[in-house]
Image 1 (cartoon, one colour):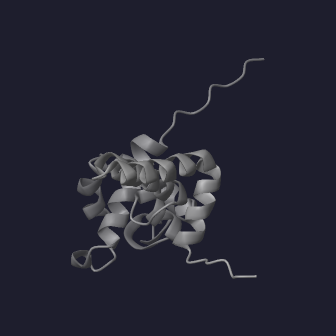
Image 2: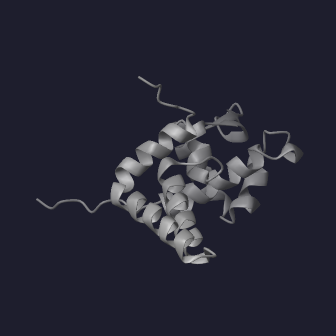
Length: 152
């Protein structure tokens, strides 16, 4: 008995480019916030059959909502989820914001005008790096969500 080969990855090559095109078009007032499939095809840079397959997968995953015709073919996209906005890069992710914070701390340490200031920025950057990406992402999640711990 042979083990079947896994299916090829289509997220990065097909689905994500289509999702980014849909999110970008839904967010633009020029499309009336409900772009037609025909507008998504050139915006994604992929052939129509691939866009149709990706669109069906994105609808099935709950990332986008679409209107269909009587034959069940997608005609227009009417909404995108918050997760779709995060995956497309329109909204922040905790991991992405943590990485941006670390980059900012390093940049400020590098560009500091005095050795005292440079030492302080480096200490903060080192402390943040020591926290690690998991706890850092949890912190960023709280900040993005507006959670502020209460004083005891």
